[in-house]
Image: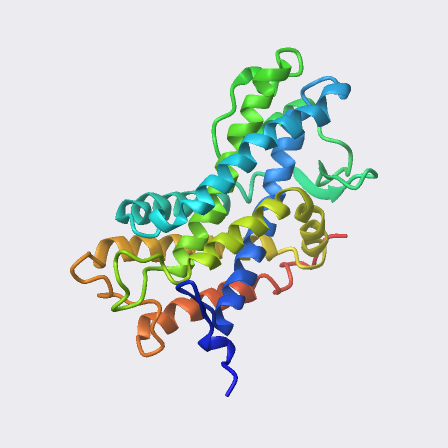
Length: 296
């Protein structure tokens, strides 16, 4: 009898229908998070003269691509290091809380797509382009790392320092999706030999490589989605918050001697159903109508 998808095992990597759902979730998260990525990088490049802007974005992204590829292919080590759960979970919780509680009520910018097909911001009340001061405020709110003053001011911005800041900012954004993939995949199953690769390493790699593609092309698609479902961005950050919390729980309760004290990856464990039920509820909030109706 031909093997089912759940039976497929190639070079120690196992494939099941649930893996495809996890990859779809990672693509969804990457796409939603790529909006802030594209906006911040665009605003940073905008500090430069017009003829240098695209070149700065291209150069700045090269280092981020290299970093992401290295990080994705180091995932076999990252999945084993306990400290990744602590640092990664804390970071994901931080960016989610920062967005949900300290940024959402402050934004003056409304997402839209420019005539050139690029994601951009206009004032949410007037619909006019943002002033220089408002653009700086948006950079400070949306950037995952502090941005030096010289990169925020058109008068002070220089080409190579701006490229460097763009590269660091892009790397910081890339960390989100890699940590989310590690958080969702979790530890190796019971009885898996410690000297062998994690059987779901391919899921992290696939999610990371798709993220590389989405870094440049997904933002506009997801802005269109946000126009129809304004709460979708909130749902994405709620998912990030849950995944970050899961990593922290894994770090706190699971040890090398008892790696499955709290098991989020067994169909017989109640914590598995709690985790995925919470994820489903967070995802569903993205399709709720915005209070007072969506703004057009």
